[in-house]
Length: 168
Image (tube, rainbow, N blue to C red; front, side, top):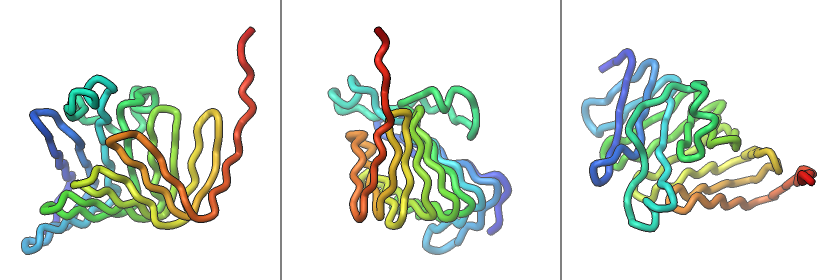
């Protein structure tokens, strides 16, 4: 079944955890797989208080890529790519070709990125570039744990720390 304009979301404990938009999609009737064109994921991070209380994050308001508030909101992670696939049963996703991840003033690019719905982890199995105002670098593999907001890099990690000048 071919679809124009797909929107999916997943919640946890009454809060929206993520929304996924796509320009076009092909849905397999058996197996629950969706193949998407230009998928765009909005993942709602937990605030420190939500994490301490064991609560999910998110307001549930879908955002569109490039909206000004997305780049300035550290509790939202957005992922976009040229193509992708979604397993509706496991809530796992894969983003393929020209993957761009934004979180506040941080960005990550790669050719492939996977999201594990059960673990809430983003993984790039190949060369990944990452940047923030204070550093940039690349790595052979990156894993971003969205539960703890910790980024783990391995396999030829290179980091260039920017010179930060303090105000006097």
